[in-house]
Image 1 (cartoon, rainbow, N blue to C red):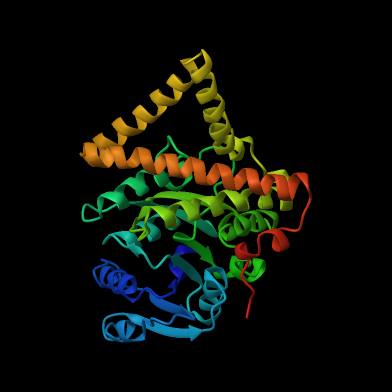
Image 2 (cartoon, one colour):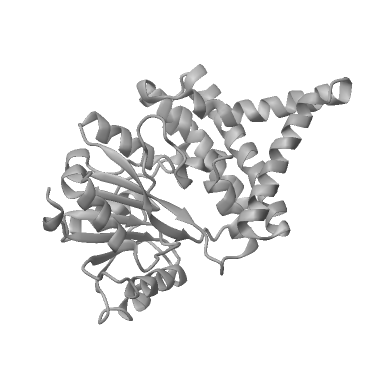
Length: 337
């Protein structure tokens, strides 16, 4: 596909987040390139966004659809089926776009076309301290979230649907996202690779990812991330990586290091202390705040604990005991409508 023939459609699923959609659409009106369509898919919300979307009918080429709740993956598929463009830009509702977003997308695809790309995410100065701390944990090269910040350089890149582009032909060939959630993003990437499509990281295509979650929701989120990885490893063993085990190894190692420190040997727990100190220093410098640096350490602790425990639990059930993931973890799967 030549870049000149690409017509873009933003696909945004939303669930009970009218305020988020308001901020996202406001940012779209400020884009320097406005040659695109916007498709909002309401996923069975009780707090609808229809009135918010109506405010932008004169400013954006926008459409709104309401459907029964069937999860974000199926809602994205719904949006891509009704969209008029031939290249879909998929966003989470809690994202805000910088003014050059479309310019960077076009420039990148003109330089080297790819049927599926993933962009990066970052924080705005106006975000809360907790949001900035979680952003550090989710994007820093020091953490498991490094892939979201663009640090995954080995092997093929797996785009994330908070900031993703996929061509219509790739969507039609793959049938889009599956019912697993979270985990629908890497699942789609792997199926695209098997079909012969390529994926790519576009570091210049960034969004501000607000992540309106508290500590408990964050822990649940990263725990689910850990649970889905052994499932994907079971489905696609040829794409499993040793790095996927690191958070669980980190967690188990911390437990043993603590025991050794209590008995006689504090050196290993000291290494963990150095690691957390590095996280504190790096976040404090990048966020220009010692307080956010301290919060970031807590965010990293939650990330490793949540992901690690979720991974271990899933690994035992799925890969060692060979149980059906849909039976063992039914909350990780949406039924399609």
